[in-house]
Image 1 (tube, rainbow, N blue to C red):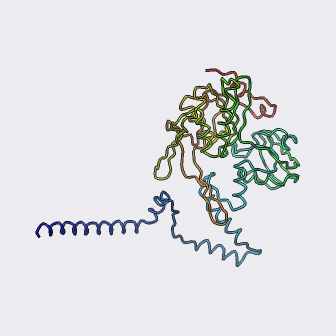
Image 2 (cartoon, rainbow, N blue to C red; image 1 turned 90 degrees about the horizontal axis):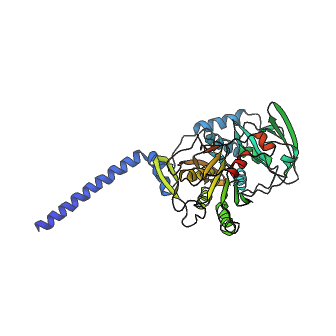
Length: 397
């Protein structure tokens, strides 16, 4: 009987301690719920939620409704408030998009731009500039040149807008007109252009004797597998001995596609270290058994427009000494964006992590320094000169 009582006493004591511990944890979580929710719930697949006081926003609306001499569209005002909230973060890569903007963004990401004027552009020196005009497309035929700053579209000032906004204004129905005004040095030039259907593939391969030139303009979902297929079916037949991977002006895209491309050179190794909130770390490895180019002499061409996923590729190939990086300093975008679906078809593209090369180097704000520096000026581009490609063809380790 004594032994039985002792066992029960120990069990009861443990239950009491357990109850107090549970109560303490409950009180702690209750008092710190906002912190707990924002830090841990996302890892469990839940959205964090905090109770906020939006009375000051209501005050602005009520004041407008009382005094503004005009019509108020609540949906437009609400969209504006959402955009303003996101823009106040000061992160150029975190963007709120309404239903229409989200659809246009997805189309552009997949190269489904419909009709446009045929230019590649990116932010340079604080302005969105033309990087190059696509062959046999309206902009190039009209005289738009690399280096031009996009100043106005249909007389609307857009020089202080982002590239996504500008792209949406340049796209439209085939056969419709768009007026583009650019700044070339101190000179303002205006072009009346007619939009045409644009053939905008994400990657293609050319051959120069036994050198294969792989050009990747963006990382679409199937870009890596597309190149893998070409390598498997054509390279051995053509006796390829050298590869030039052209990532110039490639602004990125899907990291999964960059992984598939890297797997041609790197077999089942770390290619990306990703660190998110609270130093949570994830490591991405390349695929196993696909490294057909592991011992192939490879030159990677980069410039100031090489960013994000394309920097992941260049950085990993450099860290593993699988390629020589040639060209100019890359853009330096070492942050990861995630597309989060919101109500009414809206999307939030937000920075969720920072990435590092396999050796732990961060390129955010700095970029990747080429092993061999070769400049290509806007004048070179406009005169169809390519000293970087010429140097890559001649280069041997």
